[in-house]
Image (cartoon, rainbow, N blue to C red; front, side, top):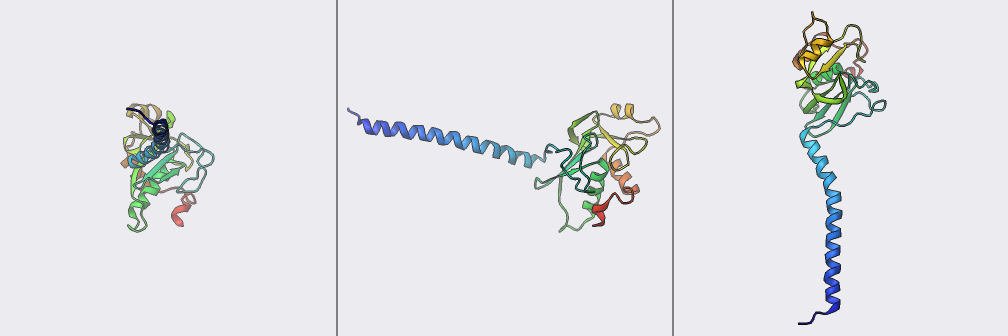
Length: 184
């Protein structure tokens, strides 16, 4: 049985082309699948400190110790300069009409002792600093453990969970003039 050299070269060339296309498809598809997976899980994104603007008060997010994020159910990320801005936005969002509401997928806060690590707000322990502390003046800081929060705060004020932060912000609001986004 003899093989035509042209057909052997053609088969070899097709194999090389298929392998090359497969490599290109893999290189293109892998990041896209990763991005889609990130949206599906509601993972936070890296905050561009000094450039990102708070979705609540419009201040530039500059202090990593107080930063927070909200990821919508559709994967859109909103950045906040403080825990109290995130809480205020989440409270308003819950009360807004369904047509105006952005379904909340997940809430994230900076761990005060490891500020570049965002953790789910529902897992955090929150302490209120004496004095203004945070960008919006409530002094709310997040910790990964209750013992870290107790060590940071004063003994008279027990650490809060996320529900307590929401209740505090609902009760006290933000300082006059700081909640510009709420007024429109």
